[in-house]
Length: 537
Image (cartoon, rainbow, N blue to C red; front, side):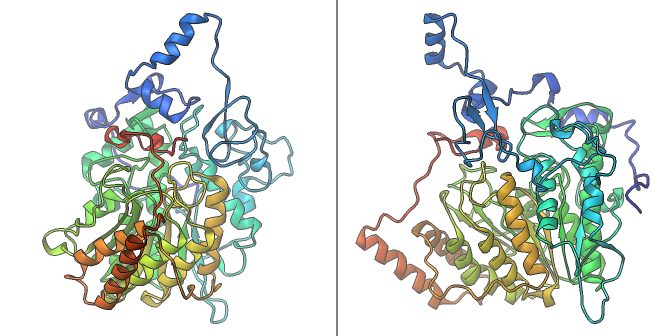
């Protein structure tokens, strides 16, 4: 199906009003204002009054709140007297969206508040991206295999109009324009016509009630499944496109049409459960892709989730399936970080016991050396023993330095190294699927680093002496203790090495741990408020 074809498998939603009522909880007029600090918004959302502010207002009736500006790079609110964003240091008057990094498609007037171009000769966003891509169903160019890219401009129509939600259309623009500017969309890359996932494909992962609830939003304006997960009249289409693209890319890789692939899609998916929309996610794209890969011949699928948030939906959907190995590295903070799932002792159940591997970080600030150490000592040994036929990456870039929600410090080089390590599995069959990541500069640079590896670039060997933090070592030791009963590739020598390292730090009283930067009682996730799970200075 080409980009302009009508939807396949379109649901008849005439009887799904009751279903959507069970999911959609807020209408547009009831949403929280987004031009305030996240903590202030949290207080407002729960009718908690700020007594100090009330006192000041009673003393000075002429007092007016400072006009705030929203950072175009990371969406954080800032006081009017600040020239740079307190979170990412972007300038107030940044022209990031005019630097061929994340410009607006000329045919989508008004998306994110930008005006339609009046230059007749100017190419649209889709045309600029596609002119360097070979639209073909084959990779053969001599003996060279190619990387397949998944993208559709219609996914940009999913947005919280007039708001500053972090999961916004400019995320895709930043990534695609960044790939193009880096010359990464030419030669060894191609794309295939995008299509919407069919009802049958979605039903392999989600309940009929879930699918109907998402579909029903096409008849509504701006609405909310949870207080942080919105939908407009285009969101169901965008979600079907994202799932369909992921399914086709997985099939293309499994059948040999492509060597590997990158699905640049939204809305993200790894929080979506069988019957629950949450955490910005509507349909679980990675789960749909995994089932499509199996339908195309894969017996065993490895899913590696490096998004800073635990993929509760993916784990729950595959929890009892021994043909899917799910490995997640995520910020956890003993359940205080959204979504609160993903404990190390959550290993799957029934026949799937041992096929869920959670590496939960106890704090923010976790960076390259922690992630790469975890890959070296846990992820890769388990993955090699599993022997997958394809690797699918839930590639959130919200653990990247500067992300407004993640609070971690992974660099583009770190993402490149992780991708390179995974490319040694499954004869190089790897599909990278975009999940989170909300700093435009960070996600653009990180995606480009991953893409370079997919195209054959070698980031070099891992450093000889990786120095993880005590928090990182502690998390790895917990995972070792639990998972070595399932995976013989986890060697005692590595466990003893890490244990000795932690003991040495403890005896020396070395304050190498990373302090939590949350305010007291970080309980926002209990109300599904992922958008407000940000570091507060």
